[in-house]
Length: 131
Image 1: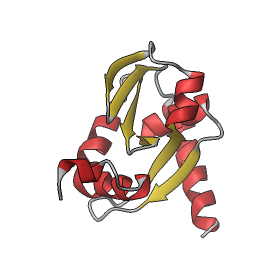
Image 2: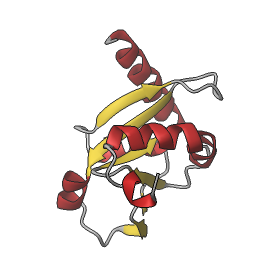
Image 3: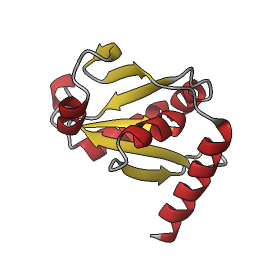
Image 4: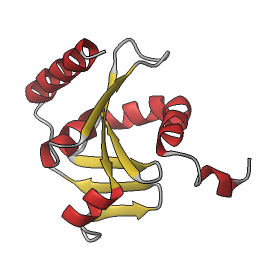
């Protein structure tokens, strides 16, 4: 597959590849949130994992939430996704610390551990119930 072909793939396919190839390092990065929202581009969508997902959901309550299981983790991983159009219309370009075609990072407040844990549990329960 040529590199250009990757950019023609649907966002869902690109997200699954990101999960398969990079989820352990993403979750490790998220364990030390450092008051940042890390966004991973998959075409027309930006995806945030775990603590970044929580912070993104606080900014964009209408973001799409997903829970995935991965062979490397005993717990489900929560992902929040938002379209590039919505992100750009509400945030613009100037707030990003890092701005690459497939990765963006911006400052946010620190994650309150209890609130995050409660949100994570409730989100996983709700998503599991809807299956």
